[in-house]
Image (tube, rainbow, N blue to C red; front, top):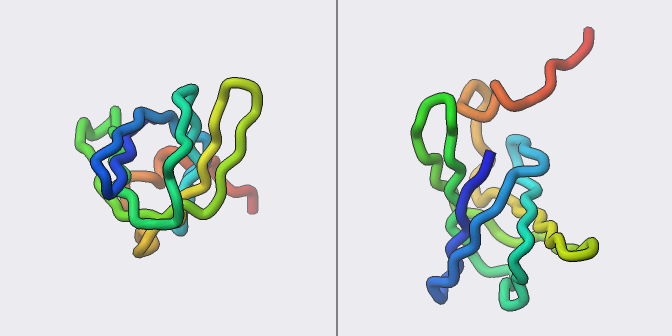
Length: 95
C-alpha cells in the first residue's frame, strides 16, 4: 500500500506502508523528511482493492533513517476500528 502525508504547513510526502495496525502505522519513503514534529499530520492511504482513499489524522511518534530510507511511526488520533479496510492487509493469526 502507499499513501500521502500532509503536514500543517502543506508539505507533502508519498510513502509506502511497512506495517499497519489499529493504533498506528509505520511508513517509509526515500524522500528526506526533516521538518516533521509531533504535530498533527493528515495521512491518506490508497486502498488498491476498494479504490478508495482512507484519510486519517495522525501524530509522529518516532522516525529513523536507514541508508537512504526514512521510516516514520505514526499514531492515529483515533484508533481505526476492526473490520475496516486494513483487515485484508493483516497477516492471519494462528489459533
